[in-house]
Length: 429
Ligand code: CMC
Image (cartoon, rainbow, N blue to C red; front, side, top):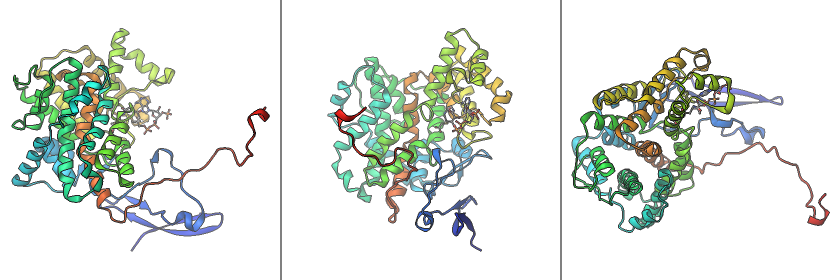
């Protein structure tokens, strides 16, 4: 029996159809609400609003479940790897060996930037933020591929491969530029993670000091954990831009902009900045937590809390294990880590955090791993973007394949001045 919802406004009752997702989530279809009643819904922050139907990622925030295309995140983190997971997220199925090989090779072949890109890099100030550089360079890449504007589905796989390959290249080359290291080209014979680490850290590009398997694995797991996260701020932005029929590059660059903020992808950088500040003030975290709880100075415990996960973030459990493995392998004693542990232990037992269901999120630990590997703090969010690129691409593809798709255009409740007459400048009081 189909389910419906009844709504009564000013004595007028209407029936609205219910939409039930494949995991039983219930939504009320309000598409006819305005035409039937003149009313709209108001939901600042969209906590109760479904913007689309999507078959990519399922999250149950109450139970701490995250699945890509039906596969549990813990199983993917343990048994899959970033490129295979990227294929799964974008194409909907795990690839066979031939498909995975073709997918990986296409990414490696398209990882090099256009020759003129070097000029773009050199024009940025030395201290340009890597997220600004990433957004600009994704737009720049599209200038070399005008065929993207036709949005031909036949070209899609190439553009997707270029974005996955070049995001890592842009990140590493920007790091080299900031460190005064010479420009190098990606090496298509290396794996995605190995090539990225080589491009980041090899002094001359020839020397390939292979990092430990724990480091490669931890970075791979970080990317797998970030590959998609349903309708978060940046992915919603990508879908919003895509709905106007803008290109994949324009949509992905918009995703980079949305990700940059400290309440979203910028949180991993903000966690490290918070730990550094606590350390420099000679605090062990106790004073800081008091300020957070008193809400003095508008401070938040960065890396804690999530809009959707209200019991635990399943990604945080997995990444905490990787964090322990990497630190043990690299024999890193880090005062910031001691502060992080103290904050975590205290907050998990403190009524302020417990009553608000605030738990460590993925960003609390990912920053500590990246710091141990030697990734500069201001690059953390760029690594989040590398991981999230397949999710943005998959969501763009879903929008593109929806032939009935409408441009995203929310409404508003206007609260400004009502109509008034223009007053000439010399008559204004
Ligand atoms: N530290 C201290 N108090 C907090 C925190 C925090 N990290 N997060 C939420 N609160 C409090 C908030 O002050 C409010 O308290 P009260 O009820 O007394 O007014 C209550 O908890 C509810 O907060 P909210 O802002 O309504 O919750 P939200 O669901 O809108 O915010 C969030 C989610 C992630 C923006 C928020 O928890 C936050 O700012 N966390 C820190 C930033 C962070 O780590 N972001 C990364 C999220 S995971 C990566 C990603 O997917 O982007």
